[in-house]
Length: 185
Image (cartoon, rainbow, N blue to C red; front, side, top):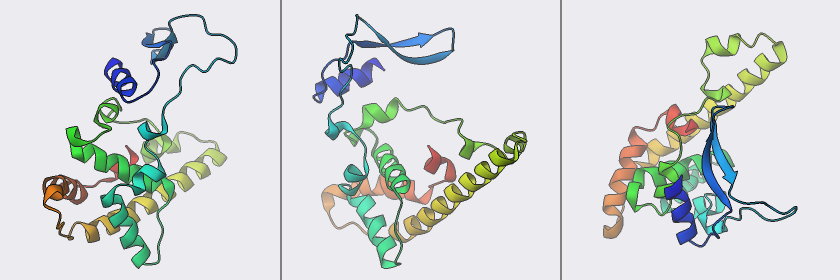
């Protein structure tokens, strides 16, 4: 977390009156104040150029290729697909990504409903939750299938820009091993 804050401050974020902390009582990590904070005081402001967003995703030529492939099939990608793809492309770029320090701070997996096994979902027992879980899993599976199909089309593309060749090779390797777990990451 210190490395992430150092990077963000070097990229223009004002140092916040916060520090990383582990809270024993809840067994969670987070941020704690390093001084008194006045009512209404802005504690953390992140410059927009440091955020992964649908706009930053569309600045990435690899994401644009997938969007182009979708439009050729009269399809669209949702924001979750754009953001997931953008995050993965930046992960596949590794240290060449401007967001590499941020990406390295992301946990390797999450315990979200979409990641639960069918057995875990069944333990919910409350019918409205079961219906919500089934719907969310179905939506994510459909989004993943669409993206996987589009990526398989794009991985066949040859990149003509010599400076992008090595980067493209890494990303196309990522395209070829793209998994549901990658999408949910």
